[in-house]
Image (tube, rainbow, N blue to C red; front, side, top):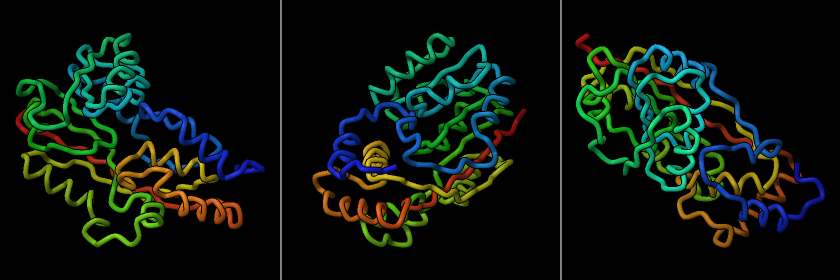
Amino acid sequence: MTGSRSFEELVAEAEAVSVEGWDFSWLAGRATEERPSWGYQRAMGERLARASAALDIQTGGGEVLAGVAELPPLTVATESWPPNIAKATALLHPRGAVVVADADEPPLPFGDAAFDLVTSRHPVTVWWSEIARVLRPGGTYFSQQVGPASVFELVEYFLGPQPADVRRARHPDDARRAAEEAGLEVVDLRAESLRTEFYDIGAVVYFLRKVVWMVPGFTVAAHRERLRELDELIRSEGPFVAHTTRFLIEARKGGA
């Protein structure tokens, strides 16, 4: 998708665009990512339709939750980043859902056994003991998470080879262990590796500005030469290919 546009034009455009919220529509036609086979939003919606009280943790801009057809009578979402809080509030308040500003640190600002469903898509941190605490007996935690070494072809292009412990971080086996230690029973755990392609250097810049933990401290100024080399590579050889890793975990609290 680079066409005749120069490196400088593509980078300047991607550097100027807003990266608020968790909407990646700016990348349409510029990058593609396979989706997991389980269809998280659809499956989340099915569970929300059966719930009476639900909590969506780290809701981002609220886009995923707002896209569900039916919300429970009591629906609450938490978010820590002020621009996302504003965006999520605008999307979710008309649906009757409340957005709570939360620092993503324990404790969650809710009483024990407050919810029969807790959801989270791509949480940065997971406080398993807190999830277990706010779930009612028989309640469920349902989450799609980023797996180990996700998009590391791109990460290592900029940062170089990463240590084994860094590559293994966010492994689904660790999530299972942590859930069980918190007293939850894992009833489903699935993982997939998904092909991701970047068609121009602007897509790379936008992605790294938005997903800030991929290349910590990323700026165009600090990485301009490496970006220029990658631009030349894409122009000569085609899309830059990486692999996104995702896993789905569903855990139940006993006692019902």
